[in-house]
Image (cartoon, rainbow, N blue to C red; front, side):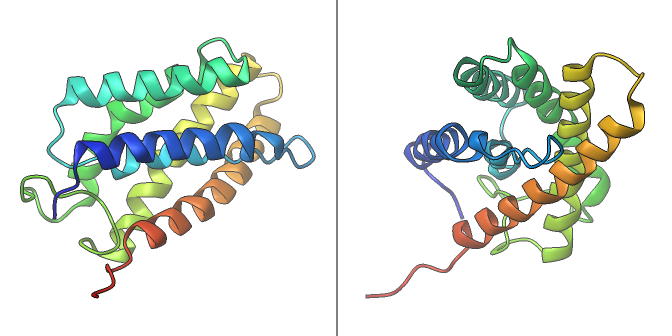
Length: 172
């Protein structure tokens, strides 16, 4: 099942708006910061060229940085996530070949695979982002705990995104 370029542009705008206007306002005790915008990188097609994946990740992260005033931290974390994505797909997937235009989702992949794939990449993104933000190992366990808690909350939002994205279309 193939999605159009226009639907990806719409998804890009939606995740940025949700992140900037809703989720950036959530900060629970300084430990939980959900970053739903990573859903865009997770949902891109399997056969997307790597350089386009990295460019899209950079543009997405930079867009979030502009609205969050974070000086490139989100851009670097999303580029790392995009860089790791093909390796995570190859490591966690039994299938090595996917149909052209297919993408990770609950409607065309096993749920346990989507959970594993998503959580690994979200955890890598958040760990890198929070250690980059702290830029010190003096509070190693605090930063690690913050990464895990934020990853769990982000994971819940991402799974809700997969659920809504993967709903079968109603027939009229």
